Amino acid sequence: MNRIRDASPRMHLYLHVPFCRSKCDYCAFYSVTDAAAATRAAYPVLLLRELDLHLQAALPPPPPPPAQGHSHCGGPPCPPAGAVRAARMPPPPPQAAAPSIATLYTGGGTPGLLGIEGFRRLADGLRARSLLADIAEWTVELNPASTTSPLLDTLRAAGVTRLSFGAQCFEDAILRRIGRRHTAAATRRALADARRAGFDNLGLDLIAGLPGMTPSGWRETLRQALDLGCAHLSVYGLGLEPGTRLQAAAQAGMLTLPDTDAQMDALAEAETILAAGGFTRYEISNYARPGMACRHNLAVWRGEDYLGLGPAAASRIGRRRWTNLSDLSAYTQALEADTLPPRSDFDELDAEADALERFAFGVRLGEGISPAAAARARPVLAPRVAEWEACLTRLAAQGITEEVPGTSDRRWRLTPRGSEVTDAVIRDLL
Image 1 (cartoon, rainbow, N blue to C red):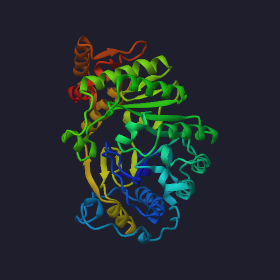
Image 2: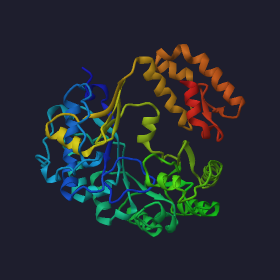
Image 3: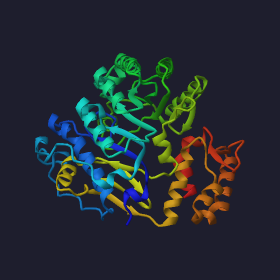
Image 4: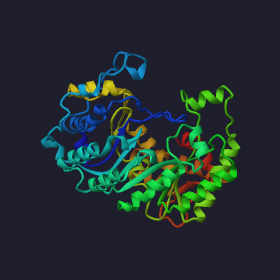
């Protein structure tokens, strides 16, 4: 049977923490802003219970979505989290000791809202299952507004190795405009506190094209990010996601956003400035100093398996991929009944489709892709090698791709121009 512990002895694990104090105007990720303290306190137990169910049993067919009627889909509020059954730490099952975690990424939401006891409980549970013995990287996303020195000390003691702060920019007026709760000073203070706690692998998220941001303001944000001495910077272009307050305001004519050309110019300027500051663009939206790329995200983009826990978390194991339903109440009820949470989608790909997707993910990486190497790793791709080489050569003539020099296999990567049309390149390859 296709058990998680059999399919992936070295797991890449993602934990989604869906709690937020408030919803940022641009954010479309699943989060809950009205969770009681008891709900947050019980949540690590639910994550561990879901993990145990994956480790113990073969993956079942996806459960049907629950009937509508919860606070996160238009109905009455979820039951109080004190109703979470058996919030005490579940004992690890014997089977749970088989795999180990290669990388662990805790994202959200606002993971810091788990608090000191929540992270202790989570780390103790993973350690009791012998899952942290060989971990190479544990990332936790943090909001500067909710980062405290005691929390940072707890994360360090728990074994967290890497922190990623949602800075977005260094202009307080713009931060307020997009619904962020922190200030530029809070970001600087959080980084200083993290260093005092012993962290040296620190990253920031930045967003280009925010409402009200000028070219000079963007350059100042990049300058301050460099001056803070971070090891990693993620730089995203602002997107108007359906259902967000930012999209509604833009459609109502209540704010003006930079046009597409201006946003592309800002992203190109980021690459120039960050390269001059010693950063390498190792993925479309990610820059790192030498040796400081995010190992978890690299594993995903290289097509390795990963398991996601929590509502809205995505997974890919073998040829199966699925996403948990974005509903904390349904998630809680399923795990209280010792069943895996319902899924919003579930696919089982054939060997060729699975290999094609994993190959195409690599287009996003600065290290590039090699059709020949991909075919050696997954022979089902061999008939496509000549077609891909022709496609990549044609794109190179248009200035979209280029050969990576000094590699044993013929490897191709996107040019700066090509990075602006990544999705189109992936469609061509698929």
